[in-house]
Amino acid sequence: MDNKDQKGLKDHRAIGQEQELFFVHEYAPGAIFWLPKGWIIYQQLVQFIREKIKDEGYQEISTPVMIKNALFKKSGHWQHFGEHNMFNLAIYEDEEIKNLKFPEVNYSLKPMNCPEATLVFAHKPRSYKELPIKLSEFGVLHRRELSGVLGGLLRVRQFMIDDAHLFVRPDQIMEEIHKLLALVMNFYKSLGFEPRFYLATKPDKAMGDPEMWKVAERDLEEALKQTKVTYEIKEKDGAFYGPKIDAHIKDSQGRDWQLATIQLDFMMPERMELEYTDSKGQKVRPVMIHRGIFGSVERFIGMLIEHFQGAFPLWLAPVGMVIIPIAERHAEAAKKVANQLKEAKIRVEVDDRNEPMGAKIRDATLQKVPYMGIMGDKEIESSALSVRTRSGEDLKIMMLDDVLRKLQDEIETKR
Image (cartoon, rainbow, N blue to C red):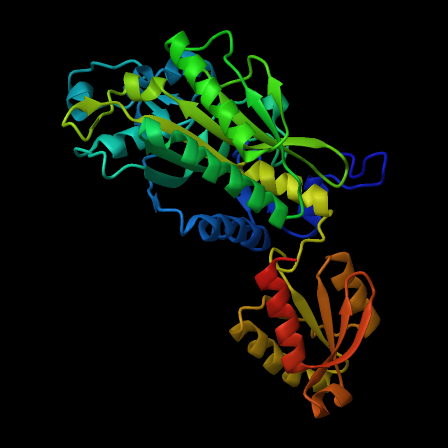
């Protein structure tokens, strides 16, 4: 593997190895072994999404990874994924084994969450007063990608999507899409990205009523216009069940990434026979909105690793500060300071190895740790740290309270 491109920028796999974030193994091709530091990044991003949607009325659910593939045949996904793009299994019941009656493939590892979300919606009668119902799920999915296209975090077989499925009345469509567009813009801007939007229209292999497609495309385009965002058309690039709005961003290398998506779906509620009781007591179909902010969390982290070249912002960095005692006699005080910072939810380590201070600073810099706190006699006497950044900036001696406030503020504001 070539560690650097023509610009001297490192591949996310090389950075992942250097910083001990993740690895892949021949025993599980296309799946990721997350190491403790990489798992911190993963969990921070998931928590970030949870914080962003906590006041939006979402209810988080979890649905089975393995399920009878009759569900996908009913939803329409089997015709588009089926045996070539799904991991399918034959599960024998006790009676079948006894009678030596072996079934055909009858179970699958789910390649998407939406059919199971419809089962959650349908598990009890619904009233128009309940809608919109917003179901969020961080579900582990499997897709049978060819071995030749697998690549680190960017193309995997097992992954997680930060999914949500909204079940709405027709009169609620526009308001909810507006909210989702605002959510996407807010999320990416908070990471320093400027999203660009595309309306993806009916593909050649679409399912459902052509008139419904026209209505859905018109609704999405009207929402984009009302939000006053610039957008372009991606002809025939919609999902098989409905048109969608895709959000693209450019990373530090100028590469284009398609990440967030908002999809409007009239077809699946029909196929899955979803219904609610309207204000007149009639049974009617809800409209389904699919949305993802990251897309695949694995792919998003791969993109972030290369975008930041491993120099993550403090709130994402697996280690926010390394405290470096100048001599062995300073190690105990360094550990006490580290405990104070840990109590304030700062991720901190103490480098008390028997190595020269310059070597410790160099190692922390190579690991892209945002801050280093040097501790010697002078710092101990004044309850302070000599603070340096990974870029080499010397922030001089800072009182511990000031260090704590600075780090907490940077984490809180996600600068």
